[in-house]
Image (cartoon, rainbow, N blue to C red; front, top):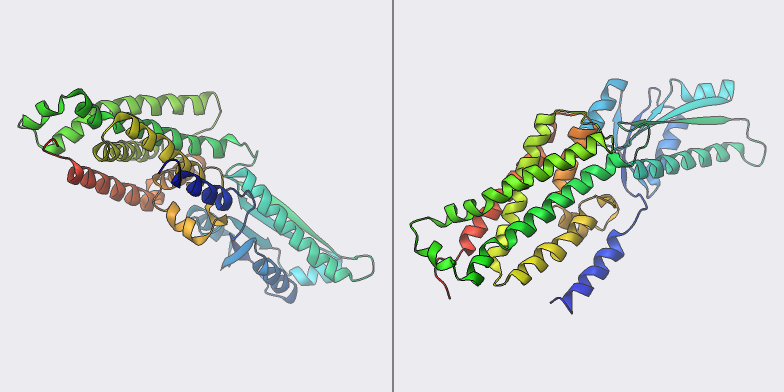
Length: 346
C-alpha cells in the first residue's frame, strides 16, 4: 500500500488541493439604493468564478453577524445613491470589508473584487477618457495589520496537537502486544474501556503541557492575542486533544507493530491535516469530493473554532457546531476502538 497506493493519493491531493488561487468566495452585499450601477457591479461579481453572492443585507449592523456566523468572507458596501453620485460628481465609493483571519486569501479576493470594479469603470469610459472614478476602500477585519501569524498559529496548533497526540497513543496498546505484557492486562478484572482510558490519561496530561507551551509561545513570542474567551479556547482544545488521543488508540488497536502504527499515525495523518484542513490552502478552492473528504478531518473543525475564538473574539456559543462535531468524532473513535479491542491474543 505504501509503495503503490501512496503515490496515487499524493498526486491526487497535491494536484487538486495545492492551489493558492481563491475561488467561490462567499460575498454579502449592502446596497442601500438598488440602482442600475450597483446591480451591474453585483452581477459582474457574481458571474466571476472567484465569488458567489450569498446574501444581501440592508443595514451595517448585519455585517458583524455575517462574519461571525461564517456566512461570508467579503462584504461589499455601496454608498447611498451610488449611481446618482457617480453621474453628478464623477466619483463614487465602494467599501470592501474582508475577513482577514487568513491574510493571504483576504488580499487575493479584495484584489479580484477591485479588478472587477475597475473593469466596470472601464466599460463606462468606452473609447474616451474615463470621467468617472469608482474608489474601492478596503477594510481588513480582525487582522488589520495583516499579520501572518494570525492564520499560521491556529493551523499549526491543530496539526501539532493531532500528530503528537495520535503518534503517542498509537503505540500504546501495540507495544503491550510486542512486549508480551498484554496477557497481564487481559487476565485482569479491568474492562476494555478502563484499559483504553488508562492509556489515554498520561498522554492527556502531557498534551495539556504541550498546549500550554504552544499558547505561551504564541501569545508572548509571536504576539498573537487571544481576543475571545480563553476558557472557551481551553475547553475546545481539551476536547480536540481527547479526540486526537482516541484516534491514536484506534490506530493502535488495528495494527500489530509499533512501526506500522507510527507510520500510519505520522505519514497517514500529516497529508490530510496539511492539505484538507484549510491550514494552508482554502478548502473552498478544492473539488466537491475533496471538500466532502475534508469534513472528516478533525483539524478542519478545530482550526475553524480556534480562529473564531482566538482571532475573531467570539465565545463558545459561536462554535457549538464545531464542538458538536468534535464530540461526535470522539465518541465514534472510542466506540470503534472498543469494538476492535481484542480480549484474546491470537
